[in-house]
Length: 359
Image 1 (cartoon, rainbow, N blue to C red):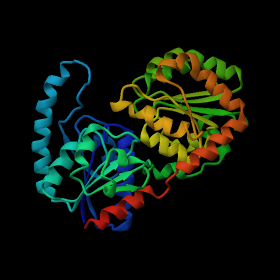
Image 2 (cartoon, helix red, strand yellow):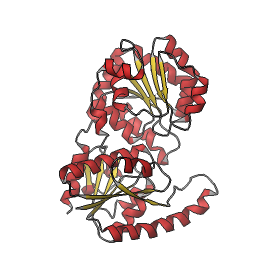
Image 3 (tube, rainbow, N blue to C red):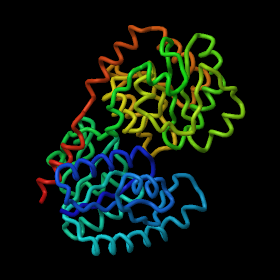
Image 4 (tube, rainbow, N blue to C red):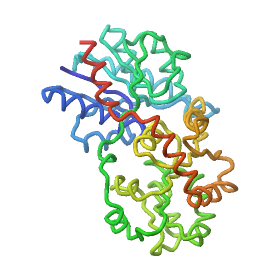
């Protein structure tokens, strides 16, 4: 079997894609897998590191505000369509999976036009325009939220959940995890992450209020993202209660140790919090299409499964919400009991099942 997996742009797209690839290989080690991503994006580094081949397209996103970058968008899109045609023709896949991100659209469009079975793996509760358009042409749509027939043909929808990185499921002993980060296992820990690239607003909010957390006896693991690391490192004096990192390599240790997690509300983050049964405060990014992160977070908030702080209110509210949640163990426990209802531990294998049905 030959499979193309297309998409990327952020870890939220890449890690689920790699999980699907790993599940395919576990099912049949002779499977040939080719990733197609966007040139210059992190998938061009992360996918080969996971052991898979990848081809890059010169595609870029369309900016919703007026900017000179939109002048080149259509040229890059045309070049990407041409390259996607060549990639699909040369590799000749049996099935194509689109996981979202810039490269997903051109590959799915080309493959569906050639009548190759195609699957959309829609990670969000509110899909983007591209997936809504392509949904009419693909064979299956694997979703992570109920009631997606509002956007897609009902007969194509399968509720599988979002695949997560399997290493996160490895439970690390609290004492061992604390030792890894140089923290005290007896004290409460908050893990702050803006994702693989970092989140400016979250970083600014924590920078302004981290001393309040420390004064309350709360320890901090702070993943700043590579763009913000040097700036924050220069302004914060590390001590025995705070660990600042550009990127956390041992995420399973961070999640095992964390009593509360502060995160953006990307689809993968939501799925990880559910599967790991974590009390989470989500700060949805305002810089995403259709404001889908707010919709992702609200799907949990309305079920009493998470707390949400608006991006514009981070400096006023975030640290206070963190302190309240850490100190109120009953509230945290209620969040954990409710969020686990959203967990889909077999998502990658269920998606593979759907792929195999199309052959």
